[in-house]
Amino acid sequence: MALEFDTTAVAPPTEKKRKGKGGIQLQLPGQSRKPKASDRMFFTEQLALLLESGESLVEALKTIVTQTENQNMRVVVERIANDISEGQSFAHALKQHDAVFSSTYINLIAASEQGGFMFDVLQQLLDMDKKREELRTTLVSAATYPLFLITFSIAVVVFVLVVVFPKFGTMFTSIYDQLPGTTKALMAASDVLRQYWVLVCAGIVASFLILRTWLQGEAGLTRVDHWKLHLPGLRDLFAQIYLVQSMQVLSLSLSNGVSVMESLDACRDVVRNSIFRNLISSVEDKVQSGAGVAAGFAEADFLPELAKHMIATGEQTGNLGKVMARMAQYYEAQLAKKLAALSKLAEPVMLLVMGVIVGVLVSSLILPIFKLSRAVS
Image (cartoon, rainbow, N blue to C red; front, side, top):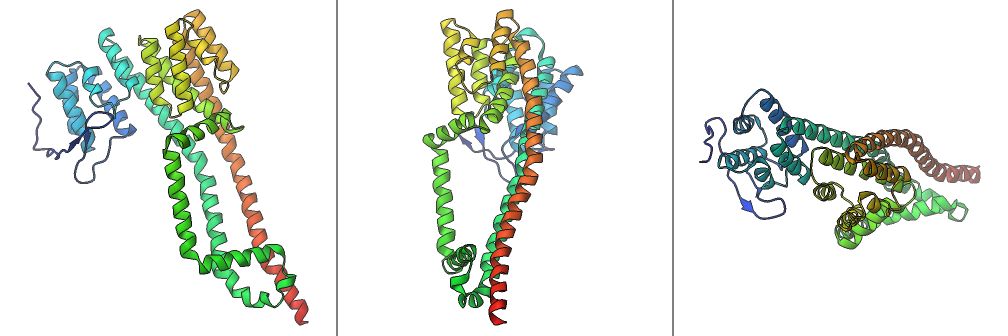
């Protein structure tokens, strides 16, 4: 029999079902949004706390329903509780909502249900989600400042071309043959922006749409994924990001009794890169043929040799899960240092670029004015 929840505290939202990847997706009125990592982390933390205090799984889920602010997530938790009360396992109930709970999450819960160590697994899943969020925050922070400076530089250039240069255009025409090349180029750009700004804006929008369509297509995604793992400078950075993500999942899964094939399958869902996913598929083929995990990773030319050796050592000694956990910690620390260094390097580089841009703009205005003053005198 399905659970009955108190509807006086929270009015049940109107649901609209549609099929898609990840099971039933909910479309709710008002300000509700799709559940995010923060909602899953709240769910995991509260569930671990309630189970530790001695509550049953169904009662713990019932309590979490009343404490969940996001309406979509609240409906998901309520359905999980109802499914469990009807006799389904926790892992099977979670599987109906795989848009919220990853295959890693579901596999580990399934293993913990059989082994009786769900609290420990919930703590590990919470820790993994926290580390993943910290990595995402670090990446966003490292990219925010350079993007801001680039946007600001473009805005300054457009302002000077559209507002400042036209005021000097009439004066400069009298000595046009004596103008520096940069001044002539900027005057031409100013005329184009002022006279054909509609076409320029339309061209920018069209280019953006074409680029986005290409990036969303299979060919564009594959090309960008290839660049991430093969271009100098990008290769080491993205290889370490994917190593941290995949090793965290593999170590957590293998250490809690999940099979190698299920762990690799879960790992494929974590990394958003087709080239790395193909590597995981290759590793799966090697495991099925009896060659082992290390043989599959050894074929990747973009992975550090240290990582390949550590995986081989872990497989030989039977401590693959523990070795992968140490790899994740090591490359996470290395990645943090690299991102910090890049952030520090980006500031002076971007300031230098802005200085060059401002210098070109100022010199393109000042030099012709000096020539005009000499001609008048």
